[in-house]
Length: 375
Ligand SMILES: Nc1ncnc2c1ncn2[C@@H]1O[C@H](COP(=O)(O)OP(=O)(O)OP(=O)(O)O)[C@@H](O)[C@H]1O
Ligand SMILES: [Mg+2]
Image (tube, rainbow, N blue to C red; front, side, top):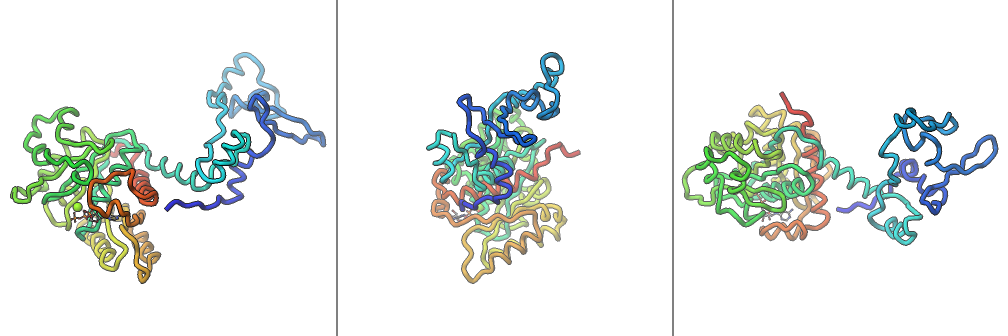
């Protein structure tokens, strides 16, 4: 949900209050009034020797840097740009900024700063390949939808290659929800794996939703060939050479064969539940099962996603607290009429609150990406 909290006046003033001081001059310079020994004078920061040109340059009142080698050493390219920070992008701040042609700049709101911070977290640096398993003991709780929307959010805002892989043992719906193309599947890729030795070859087996690459699961439930642990690991090893982030949408339950492979190599976990007694209970049991089977580290670092609106009888804060105590983060995704259709997901048709929730999920997942390759 879009929040319109007013910023904390103390910190806002510290960060942006200076914008309201003084009048901009015709050249765009802001004049600062300096009181010195009882006298008042007007200072032009740009003209005060090193103040604009170096962090280490002399302070106001110190010897000016002057010309020559000292001045060149103090050169700071950033200081040449008259950047004034982010322009307000919403509400009265934006109107005031636009109406005054930028002469009055109240600075960004707390909501705008929070959105910028979230995007920076989504874009966290990642070294190597990071595998995220999306899982739950309960069926129909929203795993595929969460995988799809998390993948779309990461792919939209990151520059690296992101893959959403459907490891459902029976006719998964990930590709249907994202691209509608499921004619080439993980089974075809397995059959041809020896010949897949380039990005071009890999992309013959995937389809694109925005910048997200999607690999469909076997679509014929009667095919009889289960997606085994060994097959998952072979696919994983082949694809990890080409993708930075690999999201795996797993089938319902924890004991099918591909799930064992998924958990073997997963770097992090997204556990999907619902804010209902049974939905949360199954999510909690999923965590118990994972701890009991040696995945305690994944559980402690997991992000729990609660999909849908909590009924009034449910103590939602207590629910959040329960999962927050067991895992790294809890993200609530609201009910969204576009997602409820079960059809192809068009991110442009999601409600702003839903988009924001998936961005928050992407930020929570990405902020744990290792910035250095693990040895
Ligand atoms: N936030 C949401 N708002 C409304 N409907 C949703 C939301 N998330 C998921 N749904 C709907 O709930 C249904 C089940 O979701 P989904 O297929 O993602 O669950 P799943 O856990 O992958 O199921 P399965 O166990 O069968 O693989 C779908 O019709 C989906 O569109
Ligand atoms: Mg599913």
